[in-house]
Length: 367
Image (cartoon, rainbow, N blue to C red; front, side, top):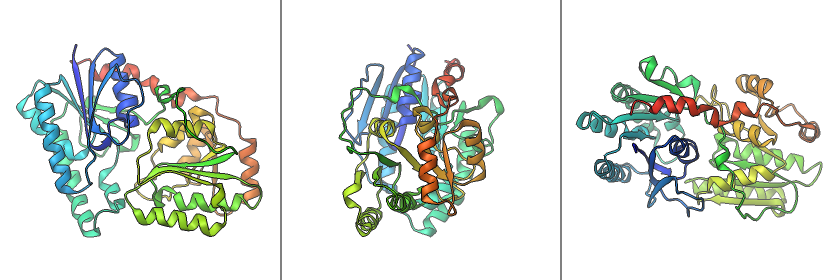
């Protein structure tokens, strides 16, 4: 049975794209699958189909990342996979070298971020460091990627990032997989209706805007706010608590995570039971023109998503009907009315990862 080895540096071994989408799909196609990543939390789901190798978390520093890459190299060299799939830009040199030394290995590079732009939103680095890394990233990425057998993009707009032959390109949007649902999960939920924020606790992701909307809606009727996400930025966690406490609504607030990673199965569980969620992203170059994973999650689970008024997202909403677009001119009473009247999309197949199985079969049929 051919073996697929999936590698990441800082991502959890149970990352939704890496494990639930690729990993379990490859296993369904008959491959022996092994995923190596960080063990950020206890593994609660059945994993007979996929071997999960969780490594201790490391600090997001250059030295720690280099040590982790050496560790991953030893694992890959010993395992001798038929297919090597990397999920981080810093593994491109690693994969290039591996391909040179073992040319029969089928190498796949999964591009699920525009690293050149996203690096500027890393709170751990100085602006000068971000600038230098950004200038170096794209040329190196393009050079190494030419030697890979396939490149998978998480966004249609990534198509021109790398100079890759058309037959090597694949697009797998971050659609929702039903394998993410865990009916056995027990999670303490608010005993009242709640709005939900999930994802990185970062201003550009709309965390502070979400709190503002929550405060405004509470002028009309009581509404609980649940935030589930992680950040390395301890000041952001402090800012969240300060803003909530100043509102006088702390009794209607719950935070999951903060400085701890929240398992994705819990994120999905929270979405299933919420009144609505938020995707109030600030339209920066790192997000404009892309389709946030939340759009597919809420569309699949039939919950309304309140999102930023942005032309491309409005166009998608016209087609898929996943939520309510807002700007500063909307009143809270109007917003609440729209939320209450929202009817879920009937086009859930548009958001379903299973539709990619034939393409995944094509991706791997060279082995």
